[in-house]
Image 1 (tube, one colour):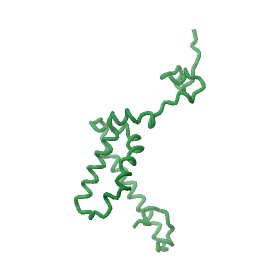
Image 2 (image 1 turned 45 degrees about the horizontal axis):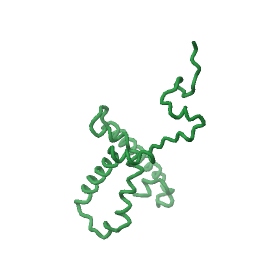
Image 3 (image 1 turned 120 degrees about the vertical axis):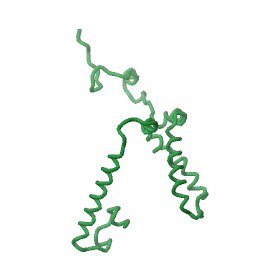
Image 4 (image 1 turned 90 degrees about the horizontal axis):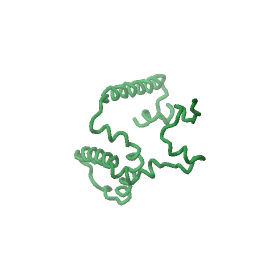
Length: 145
């Protein structure tokens, strides 16, 4: 199944050289498109308590490996026999780690790394500190009389 879903092998290496192999792969793409549309149909349009955390997914994306790295490298989880309880535990832990990495204290500490304000990159330092410019394109225009 992996070869069919990842699209990194041709039909001969999968072992299917029949004319229908392209149809199966096309059908898998259609199913993926339908499932994607169904997922987007379930997304609520109004705001909820978790909407605020969704604005800070870059922090979760960049910092989650620092949380998971010690578990992976220490070998704490190696050799454990996974039971039916592991999947709910992993899901709850993932949600808690994601919410924790999007909290205000974490953002305050890591903002210089995740969202740096490199005013030193700009030739004119006064332009770097201006939040709003005169023109929607971002350029300054001389105001007419």
